[in-house]
Amino acid sequence: MKATISIPQHWAYPRFTLEQRTEQGTILGLYYYPSGTELAEQFDDGWRYVLMPNKNSDEISYLKEDQIQPLSPQELFTQITAEIEFYQSQIAILQQQLAAITGGSTNG
Image (cartoon, rainbow, N blue to C red; front, side, top):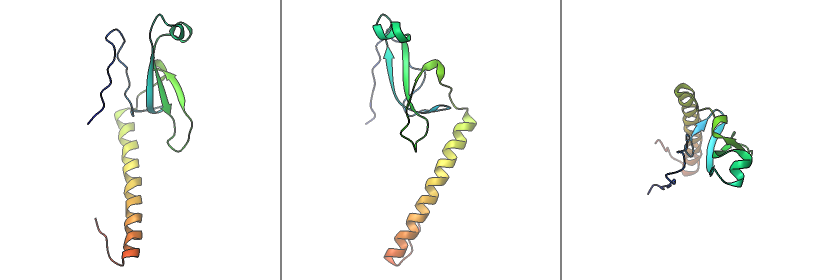
């Protein structure tokens, strides 16, 4: 079952989605500063995003919507293709290790 998030009608709809890859990293979370609140007066109203610039680091960025740039379709394709190739090589290594301990071939 897919999770559903309800956004009040008087809030602007977020430009980016959870797990979306951007030039600044992958979006892990988002929150909203409604107009008329103390936070909105101090930091401007609107959406804020929590991003992980590098999946191999615990570094986190907090950015406003206008500070985030989406990846082009070609950049997204390149990133996803590289990740698929990495995981396919990891699967091949694990299959070889499994074959070594079972004494047989594990072609999948």
